[in-house]
Length: 312
Image 1 (tube, helix red, strand yellow):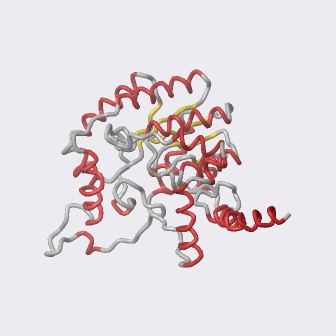
Image 2 (cartoon, rainbow, N blue to C red; image 1 turned 60 degrees about the horizontal axis):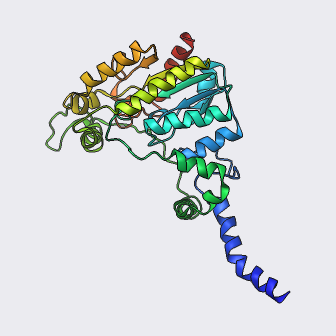
Image 3 (cartoon, rainbow, N blue to C red; image 1 turned 120 degrees about the vertical axis):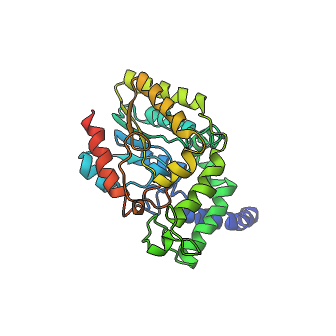
């Protein structure tokens, strides 16, 4: 009895930490925090496992922030958003097949693609195998060092500091359109900074990830074969990205070829990035590549999901 008492005492810190981790782990893996699906792969897929719909949105951060109540209002159907920030094209493709194994009744897929995720230099490591292991094996999730560290960060931000969630929206003033000498800038200053310092370095020597593009074509064929309405969506971008990043790197010409190949394969494409730029003002964009969640995204949500259903 003394042995078991000492063992229980020794394990008490472990049990306490597990309780702490379950309460503050970053993905709401156990559904105890009631935060819905956070912008991360484990969280988004776990949320889908707990509440499956037959309509899914896949892609990276440009597709991850829809107001799902508005999506349902426009489409008159329930949708699940399993997009997340930083998703590569390969990861989104593998994610679809994983979801389809869970729910072969998936009917509609909106699949976000962009020149950025088609970039051969973008995120070459596919995390889906690891994510799948963590989803299927709670122990693999519980003892993941990164998530345990992140739990401390969540506790600090939410409990100790009370920091609110950051929303991608901002108000803009005239001084953002002039340089330090008072001269007029061609674009808003933060848009220039984002294009030149965040996008341009990744897009030097731009080339399409041919293997990922081929897999995308195979996915479209799979969906056609299995009666799934599959729509590839190129989200809109601000003119600053086109002028400062795409044109200097020849990306516009390269993407014209990609769009032609998708069309030749019979893939349904809604292209707001190149051929059907909606012409939103720059205030509709948070950083040039992402729509402002207040001033731009709601309008595009209505346009997108109206057009998704116009063709099905």
